[in-house]
Length: 506
Image (tube, helix red, strand yellow):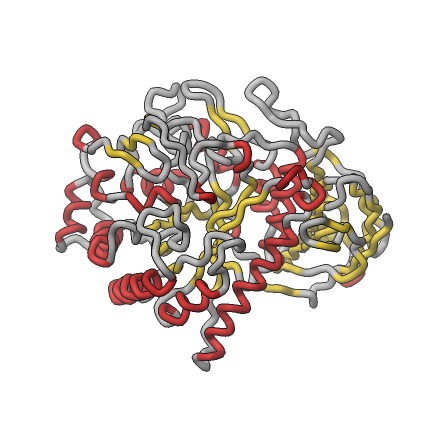
């Protein structure tokens, strides 16, 4: 397959939004305990957080982190996780049937965020709690000394307000699996009350209303409309969540999952803009895509919440839940999803890959032992590092792949970013065919004289290749095949591969 594209500075979508490179830490499985936090680990800092994991988090390049959930938040009492660790209660988490020790709570987590350079995004419990508890939590986190909950934070050793700007108003409240599941009208009314109070506290807060848990929910679309008709004036974003896997072994559609994410974003934007039009408003509600990743739910009998089937097992501390091991093919899919988010930089205000460590995560750890990068770590880290300046679309013929789930899709799925100040042009591309290579010519004449800085490719002839404790670098970025001529670059795209092609002014 031979395909040709043109990139031009006029093909602008908007500035690269750094908050597209977010992550997610939930009290789920081993994400927190023996993930980011393990006080007995040889690398642990004075607060008990693993230094080897912190180093990998910095390398990953994540910018935002959502916390503490997720399903976990709908049964969470924030008060249990503050104050002296020895006084914190052990409680039952109903979402994942785990014993929560509360050894990591709000202050601990926010201090860790400051050390590793992450912008925190806190979620409030609107499942079995409500307006009063949410406002109390906001005051504890962001209040100036001199009021009850702010002074409680001060007494716990944190005199300065944390200044958290991003807040999620609950989690997946449309889902029957959620503690405190609500109808769209019930949730919309509560979310509006909380949003109104939060804006009264600080009008500059960025508030996220719950959208649908996924596009297969029977209320998808209608849920967004009802929620936004209630909350439009007081919220800034509406959430979207999605997880992909090769359903029924359909890897042809799986490698093209970005086609679904692309339509998902367009559908939610259309619904939000419809509500704006009805209100004769120029305000635009953007998307917080605060859960996305690959999740092989069919492999896991435990906590299959998407089907409202939670296995009733004995609760334990930090059980090893949903510890998917990712393949080279999974890395290509994750890379193509990052391309999709960049292509919508103008309407996706935040995006968080779920999750950060151990549970469906780019980083895996052994308790007391090693930490290593999964295959999906690499496209995320490269995109977060090199996507700078302005996002540009590409025009041209990008070939076609016929998929059972999504119909015909473009074989080459790509986006570019251009930093006019430095002269750097970066092209991110995925070959979404499992079987067919592509010879891709990209016309670059509008950028003047360029030099090829680097071409990195992620993929493997063995699509099932993985990284492990014993072989942590089985799948890593390698040098790709490309040739730069006067006004174009020609790139070889093997089947099921993801590419980062960096160019710069001479």
